[in-house]
Length: 317
Image (cartoon, rainbow, N blue to C red):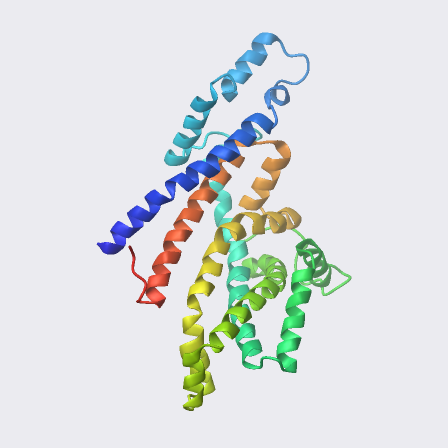
C-alpha cells in the first residue's frame, strides 16, 4: 500500500514536468516549425484549397485549443496521423519502439556491466599501470565521435576492406540468428563509446567509497579484498550507479538510437524521429517528445523504488 501511494504521488509530481516539456516543444513547433500547407497542396493552390488544408491540419484553431488537443492525444494515445505518410502515429510507434529496444538493449546492458567491471579493476589497482591503461582507453573512447566509431566498426566488420561478416545496412530479423547478425555491429559501436563514459564515472564513485573510514577499518581488520570490494564498496555505490543507469534510459532509447538507426537504415523510433525532423512531420515529433517526457517521469519513479531496494534506510515518503 505504501509503495502504491508513493507511486501515485510521484506520478502526480511528474505532471508539471510533462506539461512543461510538452508546452515548450509545442510552442517551438507551432511558431518555428514548417508549414505543411503548401507541401500538401503543391503549386498554385486556390484560396479555398488553402483554407481547407489548414483546417484539416488544425492551423486555424487557437493555440490553447491546439495544445489541449495535443494533451488529449497523449493521454488517450490517439496521436493522429503522420503528415508525411498518413499512417496512424500510434501504429508507427507500436511498430518501431520494439525495434529500437531490441537494438539498444544489448549495448546498453553490456556498456554498463563492462563499465562497472573495468571500474572495479581500475579502482582496485589505483595508480598502477593497469589503472592507467584502463583510464587511457576510457579517454580515447570518450574523445572519438560516435559517428566516427560507427563508420570505423562498419568498415572493419561489414565491408570487404575488413572482415565482411555482418550487413552494412538493414534489419531483416526473423529469429535469434538473424537478430545477432544485424545487431552485432551497432552493439559493438555502442559499447565502445559507452565504456569510456561509464568506466570513468563508476571508477570515480568506487574510489570515493574506498576512501571512507569503514572501508579502511575493514581492511585493517583483514577483510578479504574480494569480499570488501563486492559486498561493501560496490553495494554502497549502487545509488549513483542506479541513478546513472536509469537516467540514461530515455536518452538512449531516442537520441542514442537516432544516429545508429539513421546510419544503418534500421526502422526504429530513432530513424522515424530523424525522418520526422527532416520532413517537418509535427505529429510524430509531438508524440515522441511527449512520450519521452512521460518515460522520464516513470524512470524517476523506478529509480526511487530501486534506491529503497538497495538501501533500506531510504524511506518512500
